[in-house]
Length: 127
Image: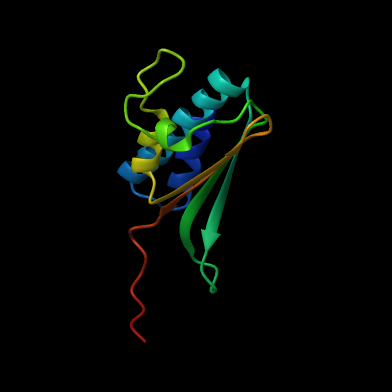
């Protein structure tokens, strides 16, 4: 809950629209829930992404854990698949909510996820 709130607040502070901020918050919630259930915890890092002139162009979310790893990433990204008797929408749902999503996992070492939401209101350069 705290991660989702922090993600939403950061997105709003950066100028994301309401729907985009809630997409970021929901993805953060799904990723932190997965880390808690499958890895016993982990960390979620949020970082603004800026253009060369310093203007905000997006928000990067990195989820990292030191859990058992995911043996079959394709299967884990399949809608409805769950090893924990849950709905099985966490990873695929987070992927759909964000604009970019990448995942890597090493058995016995953990999982790393990088997700980006790009700003939709980027100003047009009229020069």
